[in-house]
Length: 167
Image 1 (cartoon, helix red, strand yellow):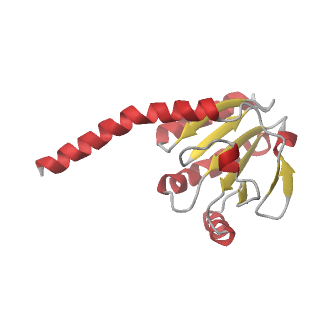
Image 2: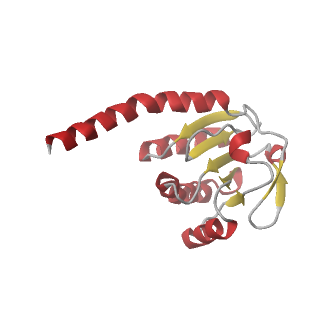
């Protein structure tokens, strides 16, 4: 029993020391402005990310086998509802079969848009190194926040950043 507790404590210490460096790496490598790229959405529409200037844009990189990614979805639904027309959330999933991911969005009653397995792997274009990753761009298309992982505290911080960006 003692060994099990030691392993858990060691794991927690390791995660606490590694996580800040991973978040810094993501912030450093993500595109600083929304790229001029056309993406196809799950509903069949297409849009150019650069055309979203004037709105706050949140890109959520996720996949269905990622438990923290799934935990974030209800919070993103709440954010989209709260900030309605001022915020554009796009769930980016470059891994799952489109039907599986679409079924999950339907099951969760997601109120934001999504894209799946496009010709250009968006997670590579945005230098995503872990999941979930959220990238928040302001109305001018500038990166203002980048996070890797999920926690209730991160979601509160993201909400504050969105609130500030929409003002």
